[in-house]
Length: 68
Image 1 (spheres, helix red, strand yellow):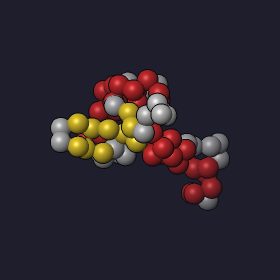
Image 2: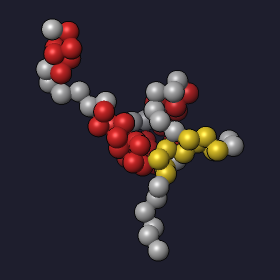
Image 3: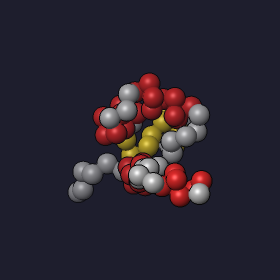
């Protein structure tokens, strides 16, 4: 059986991204980071978080291209 997790909790996302736990909670509360709410539990699908990180990566000159 594969032991790879499909979802992480806020602490694990904080460790994975290097963001503080309070920042993860703030992003969650403002709907800025993808998550799933099951009852009172909040989970973050690993694949979706990886995609979110990729989509929100800023490369040098990327912002200049949007404004120019």
